[in-house]
Length: 92
Image (cartoon, helix red, strand yellow):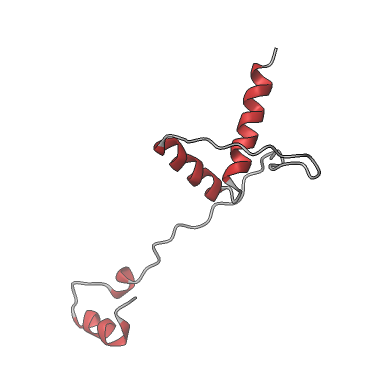
């Protein structure tokens, strides 16, 4: 919500404040998308699923939710990809 026309006129009357400064955009310009190779997340279609239930510490859960939101994917897809990468790295 802004001041509206009446409020803007009142601010213009006061020389100490600059109307343009008060109503400038606070959003930062969007950064150009960086090129990165993304592994397709999610379960391959047609494979059977074994449901798992587990609890995460609060801080880890918040980081997971933030990451999934920022990358526009599901939390379960992030966990699945991370678990797959961990198991591949430690299987030998």
